[in-house]
Image 1 (cartoon, rainbow, N blue to C red):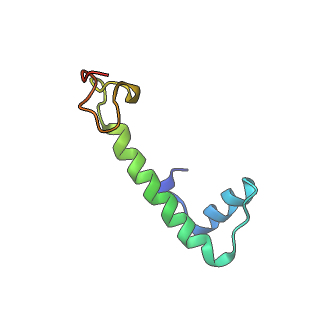
Image 2: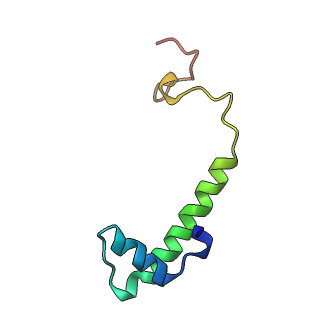
Length: 69
């Protein structure tokens, strides 16, 4: 099942399997949040990061990987 099909009862069942039982009032909110997270991750998976250097190559507030250390 994809997250696009996640229903409130499914969210409750998955949470219970993970040891996180939910109150009935939270099922819909958890399902909606999971669907939103899935949509964001789907977009990120489509991005091409092939020429992007790893994060450790940058310094906070610095100019980038070629900046003097």
